[in-house]
Image (cartoon, rainbow, N blue to C red; front, top):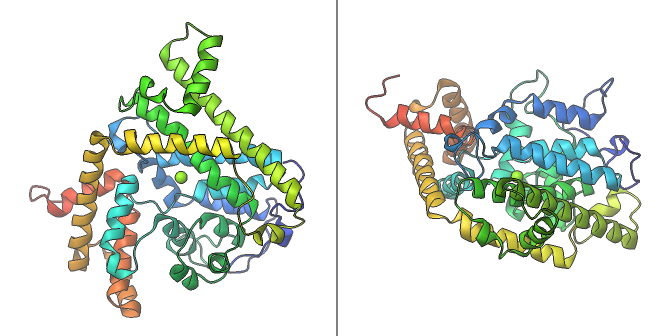
Length: 383
Ligand code: MG
């Protein structure tokens, strides 16, 4: 690891863990956080949760696991150049999607609608809930007992109402402050990763075309560079060459722009970063605009494509049906979830029962949700 900047997250100034622990012997605190995430059940389940395409549509598409690894790679590259904490960005990147429901955003929207009267459902808050409460692996504490800095990075956004319930980690949403630079880096690395890999996956699935993408400036500029240098290049290689260059353009611009911002503000500690009124990690204005244009293109042509819509519609119906069945008859849940549900209900009434059902559904992989739907509703399925 390169030497850390004074304003990077440093373990000796960490705001600590919820349950105090002895320092690790041969690792730093953020490495320990990262290792806990890799060993968690929620992390393994990311392999069978999807972003855009449902898991069984093909083995070549991104899953939430490969997405998270790509986010970690991009985050580490950026952190190294900016002298930020590489271990911490890796931790946040690997954990950032742990709370995602099955079936990507369709699943999250469906579950949020089901939970409307019970406090709602938000995947980002759920990621924090996974590491704070739901992982069940350590003798001395619930969850993974991560450092404040990791939890701060995982919680990307939060309504003021929810922020009040979250204690220390929710405060910045009430005080309109920023998280450390590591959290800010991962936030944008996430965007860089999904915008680019969704282009790749969308092309592979035949849902968007090379020709359509020529209307997107970020793509078209790189297309011209590649076409000039390699006029005979086959399309598949051309696509990958363009995408890798797009990622490069975004990463380099982000590093340059952020360095400039750091030069202007001259923060001395992570607290100086937290006290800023707006994030310090960002793209230059023209590149931000190009990145937004790509995002908009994907929304219109990929995420709203009728074939994606059919799949997401089916996914919503599975989630709705499972939620209704479980909330109306807790006896349909596996015994350990029944028990949790009763405990939560004693504490919080109907909202508690609903939260236990939401936790159970959110933890499912795509294929588990489909199988569970069969087990609950298909009269031929007897097991
Ligand atoms: Mg993500």
